[in-house]
Length: 148
Picture 1 (cartoon, rainbow, N blue to C red):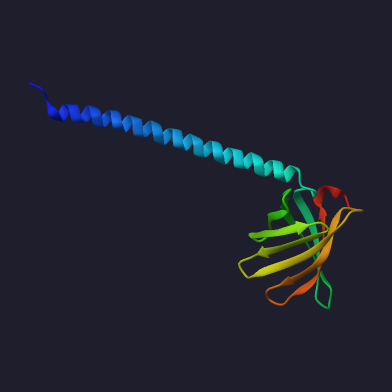
Picture 2: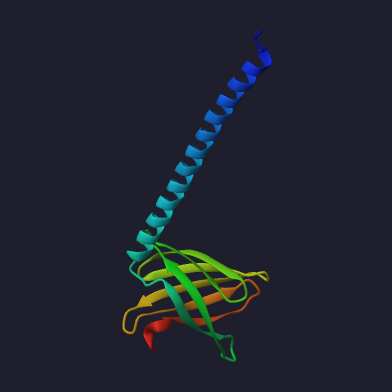
């Protein structure tokens, strides 16, 4: 005598297998799309007019000209975006249209807005900064491997 429940299980099993295959194919498409976006980002970065990587910064702040050195990891893209990170768990985002380079650094305590211009010999960014807690001054950024 035929069993109706056994037939349902087989159909359900076949449907589940088809669903699983579809899910795996969708996941592979997502991973492939993510990989493609990653490659495109690297290409945009590698074609940028400024070198991405570690930049050394010299901040001169206030009337007493307090000087401090810090580092930033800056990523420039060919389409004019800048992103990166600094010390103390900071992140930064901004735009550039040479010779102007502007970004905002975000910290747990507030922000620093940097407005700089590209100087070519030696390669550097010269500008000013303002903090959300009313600090301000001048800043110079040099690629860390510049030897300057």
